[in-house]
Amino acid sequence: MANLMRDGKVPYSFTEITMSQAHSTPTMQYIDSAAHDYWCRALYERALTVFEWTVPKAWEGQHKDFLLYLLYSQGYVGIINTEDYGVIFQPCTLGPDRDVMYQPTGIMVANPYDANISKDYTLGVDAEILKMTPDFRGVFDVIDLYARRLAGIATAIHAAIMNAPPVPIYGARSKTGAAALRIMSDKVYSGDPFVILDSQIMWPDAKTKEDAIFDITPKRDYVVDKLLDAERELLRAFDSAVGIPNIDDKKERLVTSEAESKQINATAVAFEWYDCLKDSIDKIKSVFPEIELDVKLRYSEVTETTDEEDTDDGLRDTDTERN
Image 1 (cartoon, rainbow, N blue to C red):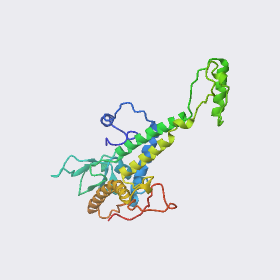
Image 2: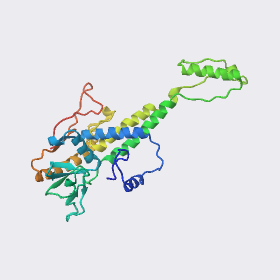
Image 3: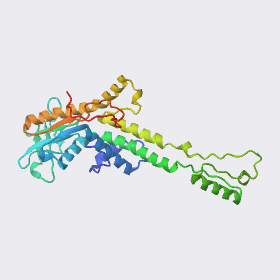
Image 4: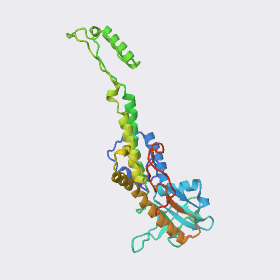
């Protein structure tokens, strides 16, 4: 499970930490850890909205939360038949045996709270795999990637807000000049639209007789709005990466083909995950016909709306299943 996000409070082995950190460049990454944790949680919850699930009653509530966490983090989960609990899901690892097409033929379950279910299971006989991605991996690597980028922007926004008012440093030739500079600074940061001082006090040796204009405009270096735009762009990029349809802010400038291309690009991943999940569910039901397990795409349709009905993402949730 080396693709789990590092700050997700998941117990790592030394090998997994080394493998994960070995690919980080540069070594020193100046990211607010609190912002990274926040975005990891926020993006994970955002990614959960792609599918709507129907699970057995015994799996609802916190058990369902754990099921989805396993799917999104590890990429797959074992469905096994037990004497004490019936058909349940469990974290598992793939067994060592493979068929002629190099696919696993079994899984291994190790539950520290019940030794009776900790054993090897045979796929197609007393177990099956619910798999979300074709490569038996989760999507926390995508979540971690965008969480790091968004945390970097959060750090930049904080710095930009703190530094939005310019902090000029002036040299005074006399105590009178220093006092005049302090008065000027107090007036500027108190919100006065402009400040008038005797230039002879500030520059007594100046040869020019022209009036001096002192420009101290905070808006000159204001970049918070640009950073917020970058944050929105990253969120849209993340939505596309996990299969959430989204519309560009300037969608009125997009021709129909461009808009359709964006939606196809955004939903392509969701369709792949959906197909993988549906294939897995079909196999599970062939082994456990009585199980009530199904999945639907939440964002299966994108429609044009009026300005009054429009949302930030330009989406409409439907229960329509993909044909």
